[in-house]
Each structure stands twice: as C-alpha cells, then as structure tokens.
Length: 85
Image: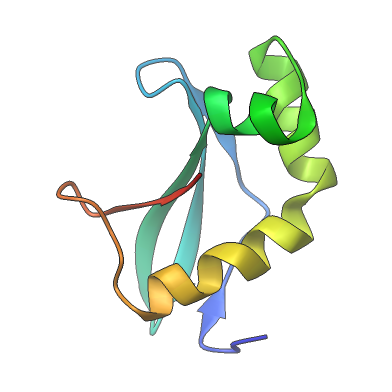
C-alpha cells in the first residue's frame, strides 16, 4: 500500500454525477475520486444509491488499492477527478 495516499472513511452519493464520491489525501492535498452507479452495478449489483453506498463500503479496501495507482500516476479526468470503472 502506498503510504503517501490516504483514504478517509468518507463517501457520499452524488445525484448529479450518479456516483459514489470519496476523497483521497495525497501529499497533504485532497483529490476527488468516484465510482459510477453503472460501474458499481456491473461489478457488485445494486439498484439504489443506498445499495451502491453499502456495496462500496463492503469493497472499500479493494477499491482503494485499485485507485491508488491512478492517483499516483495522475490519471485524472479534465475536471481533476479520479474514476474507477
């Protein structure tokens, strides 16, 4: 695990993005991360924001490990967000 990237246990559903959004801290700066409802459903199932949040929490450790290299390599989108697909 990359110790320079930390993930506070804070996540929320964002209706506008239709995604679970969560922060990461890298070198003292906060970056925005997200996983869409489509991706969550494809991987784990779920049909509602409450279910997607619960599934995200259930798989948090693996998802954080998966997004770490994206953050470390600067693979954000044009809005500065890091997305799991």
